Image (cartoon, rainbow, N blue to C red):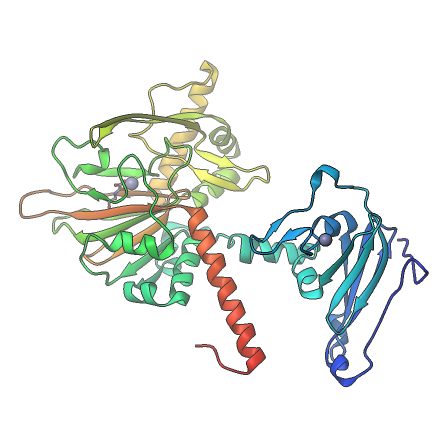
Length: 429
Ligand code: OGA
Ligand code: ZN
Ligand code: ZN
């Protein structure tokens, strides 16, 4: 490692002269071959937390926070990339320990200032990046077997979710981590699903409207609108942009046998296939299936098709989406002949593993079942539907973009209120 030390070009400044400065951290910064900057923070009282952070010059220049390079009110980069020099080098560096800032002069003559806190939050080391990804970008998922359902499922009171930001955060976090959460004691009103969606952001509209009623209907236009058993499935696999989270509010529950919900963690089933039946796993991740839905709603005809594997992976092999629906699988199967039989074998394995793992439970009026439609499979056992024995569920969807955004906003507000109260010595409520 070549570290250019103090010279006309590079100065390492250290200042901790007065008591006030002593209480702060001293700061050191240096240039390593122009292409990298080293920033070292000394915690005076606790020397074990000394650490050196390393930042690429090109990234620092790209992310200069001055008004010329960054538009403050829209929080957006405005640096002119048509002329951006990716070979940019630092030519001078100093620190302001009082302001806890690093000041860098660049080869294009521009001068940038970086807050230590800002740098800390963006450090490139594995630990800090992983923490950001798991805690702020998207909470890390925990996969579960059906037998663990009661243990992993959190329940919240409707009024608490509606009135307390911290409970709203806990609900959304539970959805992100385990993929399911139950909200209890909701009023028996059709508006509940919209109230919850509005609390987070806004409802995701689909072919079936914004709110939809799940009840046994003569001439049903959707397989779910029957009293027959509804096999495990994900909703709307035939959409490229599949709705993310289902909100199912039970207003009236069937008094007959059945009408129970079934839930399975599709990621857990995928984990099992990956390790126990790797060939089937590969087939289910590689074979494109045609999912479809044909019908009409409110006088408008539709014909939806989306081609995607049952288990969708990203480039790191992480699950991005599970697709499964026996009723909504097209008879068109646009794969070469040789791919058909292996896919049927693998899919049967997936379906049976899932069915054996399903956890069944019956919601009661006032319960709102919320779950991740990208990940969980859900179904319903059949029930008797008569004039005196009805079942009435109101449903709606939310999208993950909207949920994750709300979660980050809540977390940031919470972190800021903790910072404010520690600065003023006040307790947060
Ligand atoms: C659906 C569905 C579950 C239920 O409408 O897609 O899965 O409890 N309904 O009726
Ligand atoms: Zn700038
Ligand atoms: Zn469904």
